[in-house]
Length: 198
Ligand SMILES: [Zn+2]
Figure (tube, protein in one colour):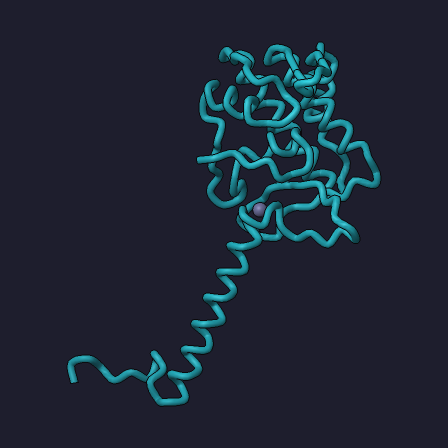
C-alpha cells in the first residue's frame, strides 16, 4: 500500500488514507508506524515524528472529523458540530516551526504540532467559499480533493489513482460490447450458443 498526495491539501490527503469508504473501506493507517510514515512522506511536515498510541488515536479522530466536514461541504449541508469541535480543538495547539536556509525549508515539531497544522489546513480550505471541493468521479474511490484546475474541470482525484483506471475499464467495456455485437451478427452471441453436449 502506498500513500498518495493528490487532494491539493494535506488535511484532505489525511482524510484520503481511508480508501473506498462506502463499499469496503481500506484503512492505510492501521498503526502508529503508518502515521509516522505518512507524515514523513507528506510535503511541508517534519521528516521524522514519533506517534504514541494516544497521538495516533487523536490523528484518526482528526482524520474522520476532516472527512465528515469535507463531505458536508461537498454536499452543501451544515457542518457536523462534533467534527467542528475536534478540528477547532486540534487547531488550537502549537504548530511546527519553519526555517528557511540555502538547503530550503526545514519544518520541525512533534506529532501534536503536526496534527494542529493539519487541522489548520482543514479549516483554511473548508472556510474558503471559493474552494471547489469535489469527490472523485470514480464512484468507489470516495476521495475528496480540491479542484484548482482552470474552469474546475477536474474529474478524478488523480490520473494514476483513478482517471486511468476508469478510462481503461471503459475501454474494456467498449471492447466487450463490440465483441458481443460481432458475435450476435454471426449468430454466435453468448445467449444463442448451442448446448455443449449436443
Ligand atoms: Zn479517486
